[in-house]
Length: 360
Image (cartoon, rainbow, N blue to C red):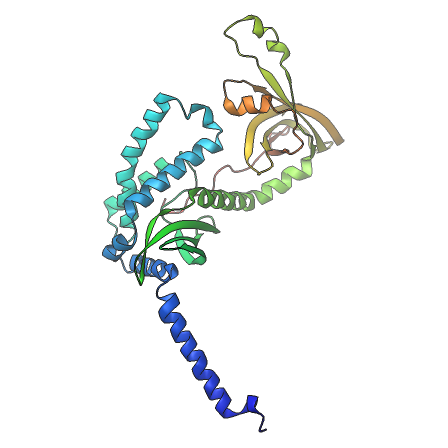
């Protein structure tokens, strides 16, 4: 009983040491960290303290970088790089940006203030307008969870904040840029990676939509399912093989995708099937997407080899890139059956949209 490690004196000393270390950590690390400033911003928003929010967040910079990120995300998603250098498109994008930014700034600030009915209406209208860039972006339905990661360099920091979207029931990362303005205060100076935020948002939406569609998807799979999807090949389009004789006509090609269906239609005949093909590269980015319809599938149980065909034109940069690709071995293709119309009149169709919350 006289051993040092079990003595009351040592326990008291150890507790004092822990308390002192905790106090030093709180005083010199936590209170001076970007995480503390993030929590101050969250608390100020909850208390509707707009002065503190404006002092700790560069609202104009966050608004502009958020809008620019949404715009880039939209162009990348639809492979619209071919339009990015078009002067008319550039002018339209600038005009839209200048029209949107004042509303975005007002809406962001209104989230930390008592919201009038007029402001609720503006927030809802702005959200619907921004859905042209991403159909799941919203100013509301968010809950702060924690600061997930901090990287500091001198007086600059990148802070990844973890948010929870209650509409999609998904956690979403939002990397923020922060700068130190005094010994105890950091200010949000912008959005460090809007694309990561939108990718997490889209992934959460996909998971939510898959959960909504699970019962119908199960019914579809019992009737017909995609057994395998082979790598695509680019071939000449027989209907346009003589177009090179016309000087103005660009050469067209076909993207051919062999696939195999597993049918269980002997007792459930199918009138038509609507499906979507997606091709992703090695980074999991969708580089091509196209829909097709099959009519009069055979009434049998077994496999059905088939080929989907999509017309490619070099006037689109995304199509041209595929036409110039000789090896698709690093690509992955998938086919998703979206709708079945049975011969008995039954229609099985997956939902394409997630039901909106009351605030939207």
